[in-house]
Length: 412
Image 1: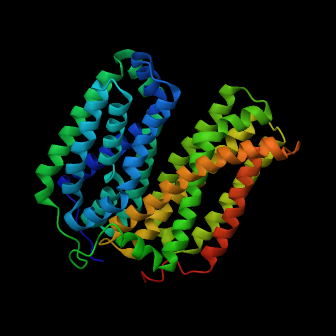
Image 2: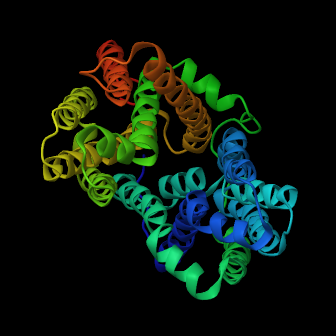
Image 3: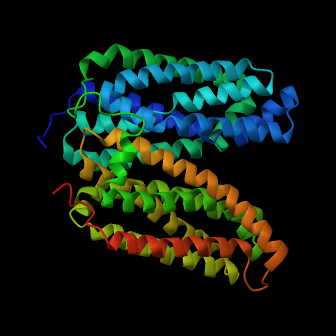
């Protein structure tokens, strides 16, 4: 792949695209802070709050394959500029909506508008910058996306307390509109169609590429397990598990999971810095899978044996580092396998599989924990530990799958 020179214009566009992805991450996890304020304003019932929160994910996930293919075919600036206008419309609607239906539509528009923010970024990185920078840029991209989730808790909560959710959403809507118009204005300076066969990309193109490439199938399986672990541990059960089983204070349990979140940011940056060297050693993916399983088992033992919460905090941080590093590593290897022309199409298809896996696993985890408590309930092993032991078992199968393929054989 020929090396391309960067310029100030490319850097400016990259900043705009990263800002879009950061805002997508912020809005994705803002429900826990914003919706209680909305509920106090218009008297929402808990079922409505859950429905409104989930609407974002349906809008985001369903459009992933199409967004990735469109970014490859039409160019990321045009597609992101158009979709960000939906994002802004959703923010405006959310600020003024007074019914559950309109709030759901608003969150659906926000999720749909955020659809190409990640795949478009990867397409732009692959085409506008030298290939040796893809790893570092991906590390920064993933880190800032997760940072949006961090900001959506305490900082956003403080802003909502000071100015109200309506003002915050209106300000964000104006910001997103400015970014949208700027990207559309600048699209002629960069956007060009993929070098792949014209018109080949469609909703199913990414799936076709993944499922006919053994290395991509194994990589996607690993990627899905990692994100499933991340969302179920740090985003759902981690605090409850530590608090109920070990007897740690709620504040300490939250600190432990926050430490894991910081580890994800650190792991993304570190893997971004050393990603080019890692792709020269494909076995590092298998090593990461084995390490992830070992650290997860260590955390399970520490919690079940009621070690000091400081130990949970430390192990959670290292677990977060591995999760963040693997997330970036999977993006880098996908790029090495398919190249710049199809990266958006493949990432779009992968994102849909990952999001559906996470949504399904969160339903299954709740059902499994309830079933275990009611019908099995072994005194020496909590239902949370059993669930994460099942994930460890999936990692063992993943390791076997990764050992059976050559990860970058198609890129050599």
